[in-house]
Length: 468
Image (cartoon, rainbow, N blue to C red; front, side, top):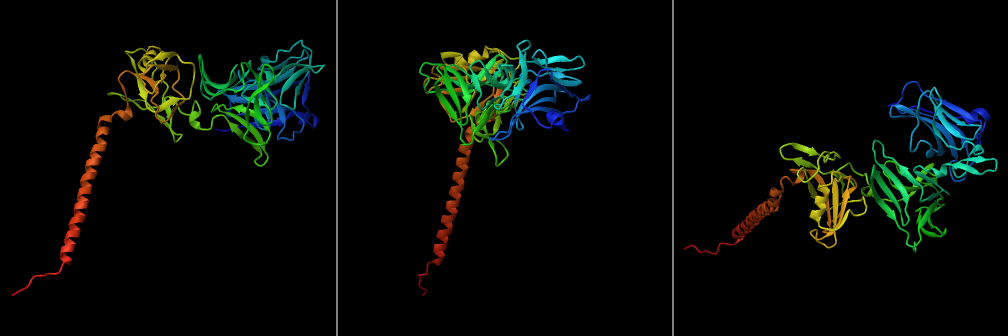
């Protein structure tokens, strides 16, 4: 695969320096290649903040990137080489021929493209007295009027990154998207906690949570990233919790990873000349929701082991696939396979409470969208009633120490056996056979050694007999 990159500074070419603002009437275009080139990136930097003593500056750019056999057009903000905001984060604008950024005389900021100048994105500030587009020292991209009143700002439309000094209220969230997947991650503020979630259509599961100790009946209203922590505030503007960085260097941003879904804090390392993580919410790969493929188990060694399923007479049925339960529903077509010593990092409210493991399994069997279930017994006995959790995703499964209260079950087609249990009958006899063989060998060795010692002693004894 060839990767083509085209980066340049329009402001330097035009004026010899970069400013941090653009006035109404401004327009600039990037040409789009006539043929598709996989990996192509074309970018024109238009704005830059004043020199910052804590590492690289912020820069604003319009970008053209190859994606899904087409080209996207976006307005982006960069901190060094890190893209910290993009107009195409939630919805990409695909276009041909050209990518145009325009700040109209009416004060609206537009992205246009194609032969007909079709509008693919806009700020929606027409008629509000906007005079210019500013890139602030905090990385906030703002549209302001003649009185410097903000009419639109990128901080109100966060992506997967939260910058130093930025506030995130309960009405907003960070989102990120694993490649080649219909799943998404989100960092959200609830009334009583902040949490990380994995979502798929109507399904939503948390996989990390932080609850402040000082709520005292008040709700969380916003969080703010400071130089050394993520601060949590209530509706009276009192700090009720904080998650601190593990380094003394000032924080520049936090990010929700697109590939892992992990939450990390970043500072700029002058020694290495790049951004380094100073805190992460999840410290082991097995705590990540997508550490393994569907129906995979993250083991103690942080390796992935597949739930190998064998259907009698039909060979291998499944080895880490999400389609093992596709098209099956009901107790006549499916069964629940219990896995010992595993659980799921995905959490949700219990589907039912005060039910037995058998009832929990049947609830999943009768639900066509359920692919796995977890039963948590109130006592150290799986036969006792407890909480039943149902999953539409067989993900986030990890190995744990045996817990008699936990029972994790996956739905499989009727008549399916777990491959490694196929010879369980013979496995019961292996210790007995090994013990017998070891015993016989030990007896033979000891007998041989004893015979050798006795014979040697007889030869060494003097002959006491007398001849006549």
